[in-house]
Length: 304
Ligand code: 13P
Ligand code: SF4
Image (cartoon, rainbow, N blue to C red):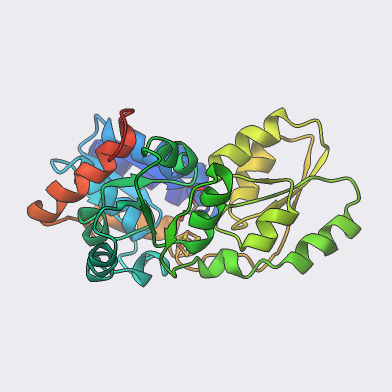
């Protein structure tokens, strides 16, 4: 164990803290975490924690969701500037304007959104459960989906429902093009190509599957393929390789890097545990409304 990891572990005990990491985090950050996962797994975990302090190694909306679900805990985001450009593309006012045009629509917001957006939405979703969430909405209801037009389009195709899409997208996944899938198929004949549903429509359609990062981990374990091409942020490759030592994982695009996810480092984790900062909080009024959308997602009843 390196000196810094030892310091983090000691301080974590002293502070009664837990470290959560998203699958896109740097390898050494994933390795120091108590739990790594996709957005849904992390949200579920954050809703049921015993510890007093949560060090969230991810981006702002993830720590915000944890703070809303557990307001009594101290939720730390080791770099306060680790945001999500896609989440920042939609504001609460944008959603209200769409609702004015479609007053009877159910508003589904991707978890990659600000607390203000969640507060004016009916239900939240992640890329793991988006299809299931849409299926819980009665057929006669219109649906607005914010902010990711690519995930919304994927879900619309999977459920055969018309969905009113907001014009947001993930800049990291948008770098992946259909030409990259074609090139990967030439370079790795026979290897399946799996991509994240935040990818462009033509990328999703030319791949063998569009899966959340958690679903990719399960898929990779169960697949007989020895080589798998992975079309998502390259941080996931660390976990895939660790969990499947006999298999080869090839990035669809080396440049699929989320600079914000990479802002969290071991040094910043240590500093945040030392100072109990930067702490993420959500104003009570916003949290109360936004929590309704998150809890509707975690429940299992009909929506709308
Ligand atoms: P998942 O890990 O839920 O698939 O989310 C991907 C993502 O882009 C998170 O920001
Ligand atoms: Fe946001 Fe995309 Fe980065 Fe995920 S990978 S945090 S959606 S910019």
